[in-house]
Length: 409
Image (cartoon, rainbow, N blue to C red):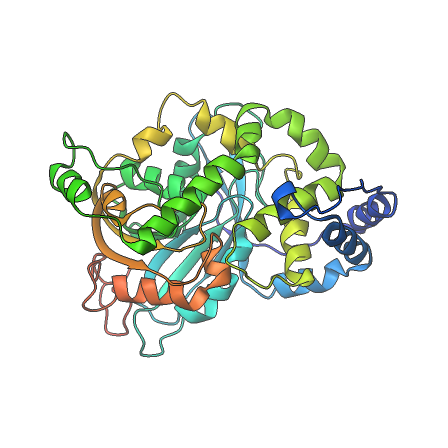
């Protein structure tokens, strides 16, 4: 068992030079007259970003990322090799701060937590403070890749849980969207003695059935959808009809896609940029943000063709299935945030089938990348849910988030 050690991002110059060479040799396709986002990334956008990326200074982004406290440690995963896991660990000066595990998804990374760090770790009188842990999932960012088949939800959950234990957090709460939703659902089911509460900003849930949720089913049957919920259903329908192609490919033939994403930075850029555009709520992405986001994939330790393997592994796993994760979870308090431009926006009665919901809110704006698009709103959610008077206050003895906590872990 290795103790966590400081980590500094330091991409070799040869990789940077290789990227620029590939970009300089790239040839872009044409596009149809009248082409728009419904066909995918517009040619003008990709042409602009390729030119910008070719002349962009990764080192300045690297220096900025290295201002955040990062570490790495070896985690033993049952049935698999020991994995070297990269993570952000920002401790609060508040001794009784709440340990918070932040789990990203695809096409995100640990970068999504950065805006939250100064807002959640400081004690400013607005609510509880948090110790934040944000790992790069295996196959993502600067964590080691997995070399064996079968690394699915149980293994990702085990990795994150063991990381929290390694850091001395026997009890903790989680925050997540995208794959983080599924992984933290697995954590809550597999480790309810440690995971005390989960806040979710991507709510994947099914309509309530009388056999499992009679009250919710009755409410769902007789209570009409609100206008907000009807718009959410329309958004979900759009995603399932027009936005799911990537998921089908990544869930069935990930290796074939890997050749394109690993060899072609233009393919990687367009594959990710499309999602940044389509899944956000008119967020004004700067070229700097886009290129930093995509470059973390380009320079990832496992290579840019590894991250999406999770889709295949979870889809084909006989245990901890998607369906299992949507069943009611006992022993964990839940907070649910509904954003109008997320990729799946279900009615609130559906979300309540996931577990003991003690906090829920519907935002007027916000998309899939909630922590990056609307960090202040996510901070509000966590501080209300876990603060004094909130439905998940004081779940961890000695770590209620306030200065006067005693017996802190």
